[in-house]
Length: 241
Image (cartoon, rainbow, N blue to C red; front, side):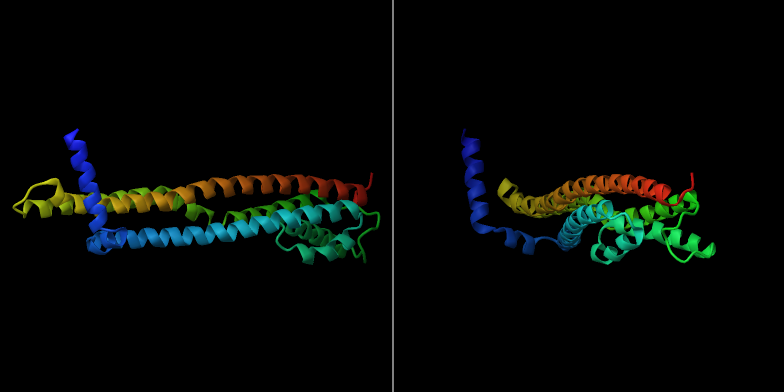
């Protein structure tokens, strides 16, 4: 019981004399470097999190509106006019890729407009849709890998700072005449800040990485469904029976 009281008293003394800012300022250059590195990881991660949040919100809204127009309008040239309003939706890029391929085939066959009863190479259109889908997938996944790197690396960087800080604390203890917990506690407290900073940087990055990865998978599924719907439309419109 006396040991618990002693530790509690010691904790109060440390908290009274050493604030969090004081611990950071008193830490070693290595610990400060680790904290600076973790701060940069965290800042970049939150910048990506905020930007991706806005991006996926726009994707969701514009995709829903574009699908309504696509299903209401039967004419591809009329749908193409609305594409400028929905630039953030990956379905728009897929539609434009397929539309461009159809126009290219029509020009090669010296047809003036889409809508005539002619045969279209559906496989070529499908390849164009796949290329556009791959490009949109890469755009959605851009910078998400940084969140995974932050989630994986930050705890180890923080642990490195803690280990170095504890080593320095015990080295300082060996040079003093008083060997008590009061002498080593501030150094250990300074060292543990690096671990806390590493966890603080890693947890949000891990959570939002999984969140945006799931969002990406859902959008990829929507792109696959739209591609099939688009192919069905051109088969009804252009492929001769």
